[in-house]
Length: 418
Ligand SMILES: [Zn+2]
Image 1 (cartoon, helix red, strand yellow):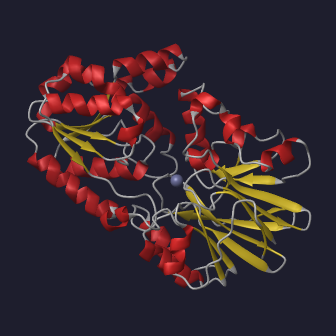
Image 2 (cartoon, helix red, strand yellow; image 1 turned 90 degrees about the horizontal axis):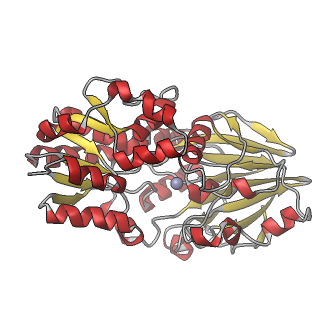
Image 3 (cartoon, protein in one colour; image 1 turned 90 degrees about the vertical axis):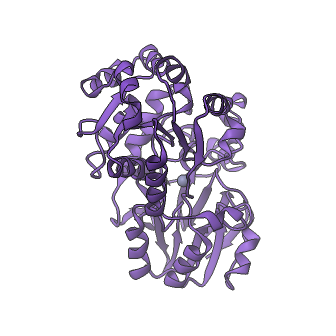
């Protein structure tokens, strides 16, 4: 088997890995790099010379296999030459489609076929088995790829401290036999490692902050970060507060309900709010059906103001106008539950924070990484006991040598025979 990392050998995001055997070739992930500038057009961020070779027909790929619905792993699948089959998890298909519906001018979309957890499929001479993993994205997979008597396990993104940690434990208990482990190392060399706690510990911290708040509790996280939504839902339930979600989050949860038991807008103690600017945008781009679908579980801003001290409300930067116009926020708390670095990237997020400071809203950050700690990486490597470990999805691949004796650093574009 031949391996080429087209991107990801020394960066987080934009991963793209080629595996081939005899005449068969697959790509694992075709991600948009985190450094991508949307003003420059998507073609400025495709990994080269791979895309040029594909477009000129110099190279042929039989399938593209996507690990999960984070843009830094699937964002370039829509600009691949037509006709290459794309595979991903069933729920990921839904999440990617919904992201495209709500931002039609975003990245180009593509057709995909779904695989299933632990069901091996064949692409020419290569056998691929998906392994559902614990990660901050719902429906994330690692892949066991075998050909010619050799095997490689690509972890995708994963962790062992999320709400699906049993998947990590299961993998450690019953690991596949592998020659090569191609392992994410996002937290290599990151000081944030020390602050990595489990979603369950995070839930307790949410409970504590909610209990300390006399006014409304506002929480900000990604609408597709299902683990975190569940953490916040559980904390609201324990503190006997109503959870307010917006119609988009309600839609995400509804679309995923056939894959897991997730909180739904129709449940008691959950209500749906309609931030005006976001609702206007949905109407403009023709998504009236999403708006109307959740009206029956809606709550008015007037009613919300009356019960501020008894709710936990999920908000995003786009809610600022509604918060200013309709709510009091007295004695309130804002819990920011995402990566801190977004403050540098988003002016609207900074504006939101500025407004809360003006209103004397207590501001707290509660977050934990979507990625494996070094001790979890060691645990996985011990269980799989590969002959060779190749780090990927890390800014510090060389740090892996501090923890493993059988590391092979591979540069972007370098060909390696397995
Ligand atoms: Zn990810």
